[in-house]
Image 1 (cartoon, rainbow, N blue to C red):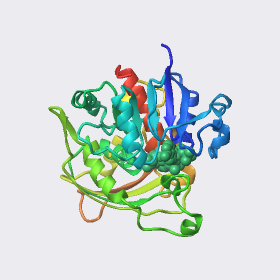
Image 2 (cartoon, rainbow, N blue to C red):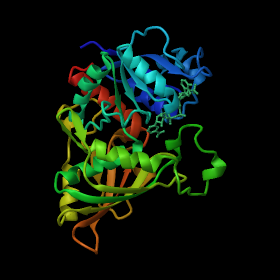
Image 3 (cartoon, rainbow, N blue to C red):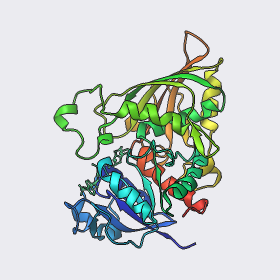
Image 4 (cartoon, rainbow, N blue to C red):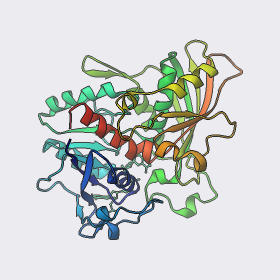
Amino acid sequence: MSKLKAAIIGATGLVGQNLVKILSKHPWFDVVSLFASRKSAGKKYCEAVKWYRDYSLPDDIGEIRVECMENVEGSYDVDVFFSAIPSDIATYIEPELARRGYVVISDSSIYRMDDYVPIIIPEVNPDHLELINMQRTSRNCSGFIVKTSNCTAAILSLSLKPILNLTRIERIIVSTMQSISGAGYLGLPSMAILGNIIPYIENEEEKIEQELPKILGLFCNGKILPAQFGISVSCNRVPVYEGHMINVFLEAKSEIDAINVAKAMETFIGLPQKLNLPTAPQRPIIVRKEPDRPQPVLDKDALNGMAIVVGRVRNDNISKRYLKYVVLGNNMIRGAAGTAVLIAEILRAYNFL
Ligand SMILES: NC(=O)c1ccc[n+]([C@@H]2O[C@H](COP(=O)([O-])OP(=O)(O)OC[C@H]3O[C@@H](n4cnc5c(N)ncnc54)[C@H](OP(=O)(O)O)[C@@H]3O)[C@@H](O)[C@H]2O)c1
């Protein structure tokens, strides 16, 4: 099978760099074009980027000249665009690319709640890809947009999927500890976060509360029926470099045993594992038995950052219907770039690409 031509928009950013890293050695995709703002355009990628990964920038990609993508101009010899740009720019770039017939896999939050745009976590809801056909018909174009979810919602929904295979959930309460890389390269001044915790992340709680029922919803008669559980989220920014940790408290409809939940999580596999896709981790959920795991420093790179790590799965003293656990995931890989590439692989496997 010949390789597909991939372009990255926002290639100089934190998510963009993770896309470069994952795609640089990919068996199905070749990175042919890199886009960023006017500030970076015209420079070689190795000159434009402040490379932060502990992995050398691949030489061939470093030599690519960054192009400007502040507007969609001309046509591109590209099969798939990976978009990792701020939402205000994605608002007009992504639909315009789709209108011109391109496939766009996007990490930005804009359009995630559009009725015809699927938010895909490949192990959780690959059936939602059906929405692509509705999107193409309703917009009358062959191109389309697929979204990754908010990074915390990606980690959370993956951890909840095996539980939903066991029982219905009445209510979920979530408290997050989110790393500074979640805010992008220029996101937070060090003066604001070093030695500190900020108990607020703009729009984050709303995104998680809206996206989770859509991701975990049922695809039925051409639309998604949102999952029916209550959800309340409180978000905190903590002085951790990479990896979001989430404390989850949930109330099930009926009694639920923590041991069975841990077993269901560690044996859980989804479509990417069944199809043996190149970026799929062997197991998407690792369950640690030690009482002091997961930890960002030790667990953020589990299975190349594609596995989430769960710990402290236990019942609550109040009722056997209550369960609590902690989950950690790599916000830039499982929460963005890695999931975007896994989506591209599923699209290829299902002949959307
Ligand atoms: N960081 C995470 O953990 C994470 C997780 C999930 C989703 N996301 C989403 O992913 C997207 C990228 O996040 P990030 O953390 O990588 O941000 P970032 O580090 O700030 O990078 C932003 C990228 O967008 C480019 N850009 C900025 N303005 C532009 C313009 N006018 N035209 C074209 N390109 C422009 C930047 O290029 P220059 O270098 O040339 O300015 C840079 O490559 C955001 O929508 C974010 O919400 C991030």
